[in-house]
Image (cartoon, rainbow, N blue to C red; front, side):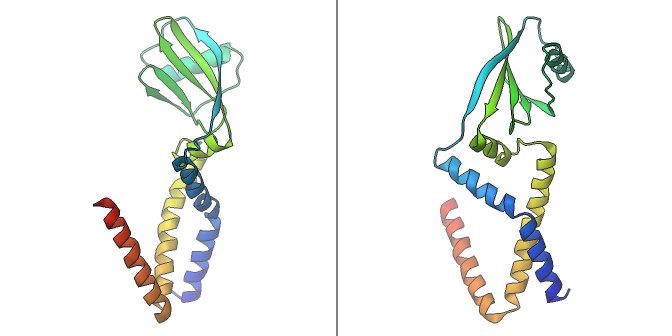
Length: 175
């Protein structure tokens, strides 16, 4: 492949996925600094009838419809007695089952919390597809960058030294 073609592919992929490239360290860094975002939690409605053991998606869709709530979800994450309706990177709901029935809560995440949810893969299906594309693109951008660097002696030496230092840091951190 011609060098000019590799440069164009490298630039196109890097530019296309630059928003994700910035989102991941921004949201991860904020999380590590203790800024995890917040969400307003308010009771939306209660369900007195027992929850079905199967077809809970259909059951909850019907409950939202009966309450006059125009809300749709892609899937439900079940954890113990809690049901979280995903994606959770936007206004969403959560249901908590107890002895007294089930309470459904409306959750409104702030911008930081939305970023965290996307970072963790809890966004809509479209974002998940883009994140999968980003994973592949970052590998291709890295490999094309290495290919371009090793063909220029001054860059090859710098790349080799920096790669070696980075590898040593990771190995040292793991052991």
